Image (tube, rainbow, N blue to C red; front, side, top):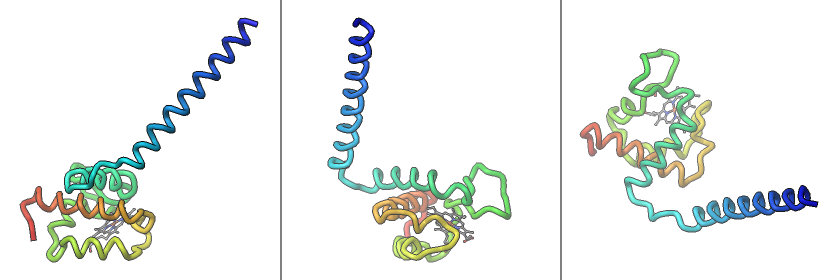
Length: 124
Ligand code: HEC
């Protein structure tokens, strides 16, 4: 009897936890903060960490000819501006994972790349 009560209470808690988690998720989706450059760049950083690091080196990694260059180097190439990156991310570049991104994630990655460029002192 007592054991059954405990079990039921546990189930109740698990349910409440699930509901709370669902509420947090739902509120996150409906009330994303307004997108401004800093926020978007921060999200873009996470997209890059999740999808691009199997190939693209970090600046702290040892040079490796089998790997793609760090984004910090890519943004210094001539002609790499917002339009270039937007177009680049719209196209598929096998075997790159860029094609798997949602449009909003692509926009965030562009914001991230432009932030890197700005950090490097380039604004064209
Ligand atoms: C399977 C390996 C791989 C993955 C994963 C990958 N890339 Fe690449 N990426 C490359 C290679 C190879 C190049 C070409 C190297 C070069 O341009 O010097 C490249 C080049 C680039 C360039 C430079 C384009 C240019 O013309 O200057 C950008 C921007 C880029 N990748 C973005 C991304 C983004 C964003 C992701 C993650 C969503 C990603 N890549 C994931 C391999 C990869």
